[in-house]
Length: 114
Length: 119
Image: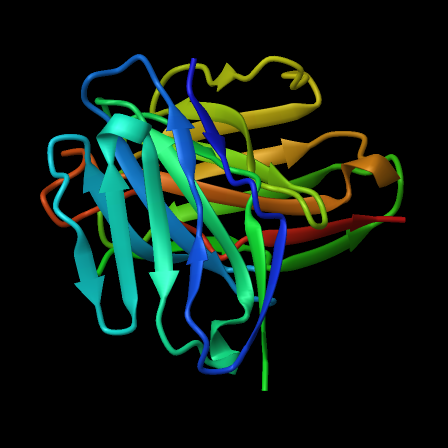
């Protein structure tokens, strides 16, 4: 069975602080994909990143960075120098090796306070 | 990049009526589309997988007679909420995989969502 856990339900940080959103996943597949999505108040999902299970390289994109640790089944997301516009719900998600369904974690609501 | 549209974006209906939501892949062919439901302050929950030309596969606990899914073409899937009730009020989101599946840069494409309110 596949499962995604995001232990942090809500996080509040002051602008310019760094923040890390945790994600732990469970799967029996040897090939799988991990995702992070941002959902602003408008509701539309914004794709942030996709990683496959064979690529454990950390990735940096501007103020965003991701740490994929297969040994601990974690795929954490860090926002550096947070901004008010980063306030949103962030979902970590998992899919299997084929072109199949995406399982979402419960989400972490991030509030960045000016 | 690939785009998935949904129509309508918002709908308000009376209890007992049926509502149809369309999901279209605008610039690619989608052999598989997915329907999710999201209640306020909750995560997205997969309702069903829709394959072009065949019956949809529903997740456990989702009533297939209440949530009718039709995937008649490679660019269109529809979700009909039959005899809607207030508890069906939710945010419905569709997604689509391209016919070639995940490429090295592509991913599953999500629509903007449809907010259904049943009075």
